Image 1 (spheres, one colour):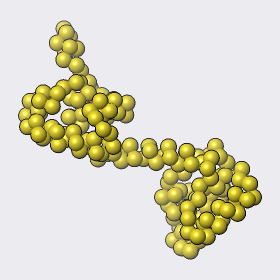
Image 2 (cartoon, helix red, strand yellow):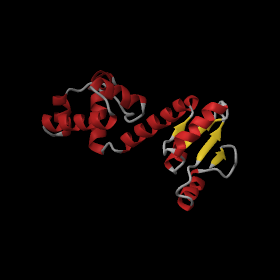
Image 3 (cartoon, rainbow, N blue to C red):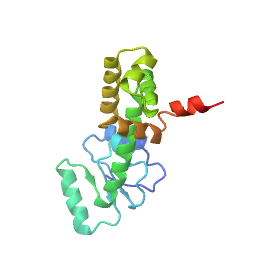
Length: 171
């Protein structure tokens, strides 16, 4: 079933209802290449693909054949939009999974504190700090504390960063 993205009633809940009532029907959205916002919710709702209105007849037929085999199809010019949405969703899920204590560790890492200094301030062992850091690295899919600090500041995970120099020189 091809649906035109421009139809006002085409929304994730519409896709969900269609795929529930017609489980053997592949729902594919047909859209302009620049209309890449909200692609991911439609795919999560059960859409099996996005096809650009700019496809040649040969590409269109090839996409339909792929659908018939059970594959998901996304026009090449729309792939980057889906990737951007996936990355944003992954980052949001990662941020939601960070505990309060891990946020405290993040804040202190951003201030430039060492593991020992963080342990002293939070009244925990250095090993516990390392465990928190390892957990943060895994959740955010990062490699080192510099990446963690940059990511935390950029994404607004920490906002009240003060360096030791700033706190001592304040009147």
